[in-house]
Image 1 (cartoon, one colour):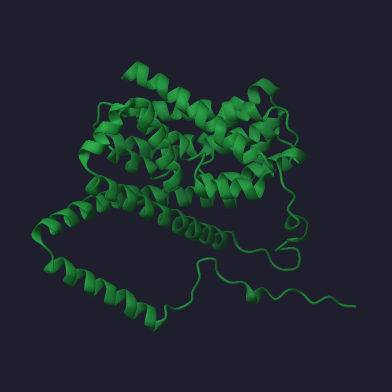
Image 2: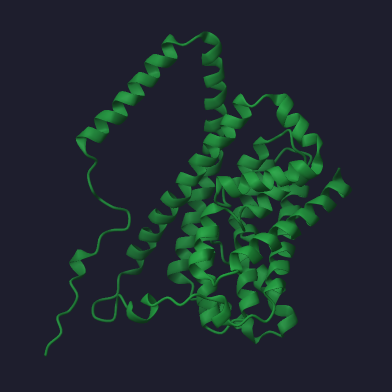
Length: 343
């Protein structure tokens, strides 16, 4: 019996092309008009608060958005043009060298934290030592060149520039290696959850392969929109804290180094920013010293709300707890040493 070829015309563009309903457009337009009228009729003191909020929010967005675009372009290039087999060569190295090499591989793989999870899964399936794959997964979003460049731009002109750039790179690598080491000799079967779709899904076996340029722009659009919404959320929360939280509260928290580090780690996990833009948010918390800001920049790309969901769906039971505890402990210890050295 003949088998009908799949209908490729049913594939929907990942960016979506559905027109915006008229009702939705009217609601959004109405809200914008009401907001503008409200600002005009508001008390002048309130307007000053709103202006401060908009200045902080806008500056964060304008500075970070180009790096989100650069990160999306780099991730799409890696996804489409760089074979996963490039990283599989790490398995040929002696075991003691695999973890540091896996961490440094992030320099050549500019992918965000969400993109590093499926890459790590693929590497484990192709024979890379699971602890090395986990090390790469955690290090790539911190060590990749786009993130290094965004951190440099966010802190340029400050006396702590090289402390933040170098400290983030070195501490991120050490924390990733520490968590990879905690995985020990765990096998692939004990690390990964089975995914039935992997054995049945083959999108090009029955038809023409999708052109690379189309795949590139599909990944680019998806990654940019995905990371952009988290940037907007992070900028909104950061601007709200900076504008409406009394300076005395932030100052009092910043004076207690241990509490400040823990608070910035928790904030990074809750904001769930992309690593290409989080340096601009961290740099806006000028009340805090280098150690709490480094805690934000190192812990956030390894553990946040969206990543916890990805980890839980990709890895076996117990992995999330091991990563959270390992990354939190190593980040806390490292940043406490930074506070001792740099004050």
